[in-house]
Every structure is written in C-alpha cells, then in structure tokens.
Length: 318
Image 1: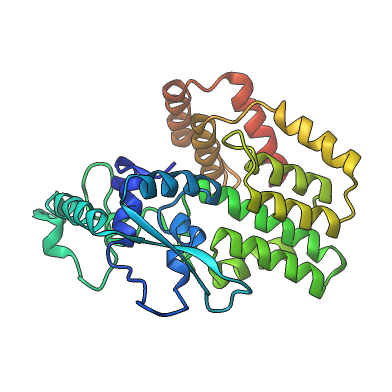
Image 2: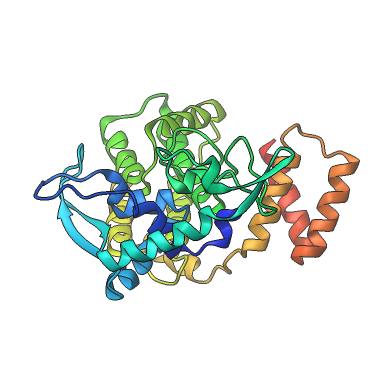
C-alpha cells in the first residue's frame, strides 16, 4: 500500500513516470540498476514479485522494450526496460496531467509544475504530496533504493525479512563470507540501498532476538506466495537459503504447506498494525492515541481479537 498522492496512481502509471527520464545507452552493454525489475519495483514502491506482471502487460501493449544488459557490480546480465515511443508519449501525457495538479504550499496554492526541479525525478516530487494535495517538506514514502526514509507497507515487508536474516547471521557475533553472499543476493533481489541495509544490520545486531532459520524461511515463502505463485527468481533464492541453513526437503514441504494454508493478512490489518506500532514507539499509548486507534478499528473493520493479537505481539517486542 502506498500513501499520499502516489497511492492514487496505478503501478503502471508510476512505472511510466519512473522510466520517463531513464535512457538506455544506445549500443552499450551496460545499464543502470534503475532499469531492472529490482530498480523499478523499488522506485514505484511495490514488492519485487509484483512488478513482472505489470512489465509483461506493458510490453504486450507496446509501451516497453526489453533488452539484456550487464549491471555494474552484477555477476550476470539482466533484463532492463525502457519506454517505446508510444510508451513515452503516454508517459509525457501522464506527466503533464499530474504536474498540472494544484497543491497547497504554505498559504498559497500552485501547480506542481511551478515547484518541480527538473533534475528531481517526478516520483520523488509526488512522494511529498499527501492525499489532501498539500506539499510536504519531506517525503511521505521513500523507495528502498534510497538510503533513508519510511518505506511503503509492501517494502517494509522486505525490510523486516532482511532485518531477521541479519539477526540470524549475527547469532554467533560475526557474519561469515557465505552468510554475506546470501544476504547480498536477497538485498540485490529487493533493490535495497547499501546504507539502508547497514541500518537494518545494526538494528538486528543490537536487538539480538535471533529467529530460527525455519521461521525466516517460512516468512520468505509467505512473501513469495503473496500473489498465489512463486516466481523462478524466488525459487532460486529459497533454494540458496534452504541449502545454506540446512533446511531439509521434509521441513521445506511442511513449511510450504503451512504457508499455503495461512490466511493472507489484509491491507487493512497491515495498516492498523503499523498504526499501533507507531503509537507504541515510546512504550506508552496515550488517551488520544487510544481514541484514534478505536476510530481506526471501526473504519478498517478490525476485530477485538485482531487488536488483542497485535497488542500482544508488539508488547512482547518491547
């Protein structure tokens, strides 16, 4: 789920705006990470596994062209995506529409085009516009490819996974070369900025709440099954993790069956969970926060049992 004005745009529209000013060097053999599936998913604030379907649909509709290029720092060539001429025309039309939006900035109202720095990606500008079309000083949501900032709900799932994997790796006080290699694969798959990864690693090391590898593996399967199917990239990643941590086939199939029988968590539940987590940052929920959470429960149809479950889980964390 993406908050603010960005949340009013579809994944396809955000993808077009991201690729609008991204050029694939003609005749070259290298391409920037921002043109890969990982780079695009990070920029448009969706889980990595959800982006291939959008890209395939756009390619089928003649909006995208696909090539194989080497990515600096990568081991092998990857698919990269750029807009075709019809795709660029559609993206330009979309950019004109969003930049004509009237937003409030202080006491005045102005078109977004008037405050847009041409060197700033359009999506970064839009990330500072809230649902009421008020231009904020700081982004409401930040892609995981950026070093800092609050990630979208989808991307936070990826952050939690990386944090827990680092917690497991730090169990003996050091990270081995093999463990780092595995972590690098996951981070590259998610398109996460190194500085953000370092922060997650430090958080995991300080917490030292070490989850068993089966629990981390189960979470990886849940995320892979989020839309009902597991992509080949995800199968490869699961296999690497399973072999590294010695998870046998019996355990793998048991966890896979458990994941398939697990009821998916709704976006409303995730939204309420995030709100409660924010309220409990100082370990105390004030009367005002209680009132806001009660209203939110009614709006999102959160049951008393779900509320109690969230409270118990977050209380244990603190």
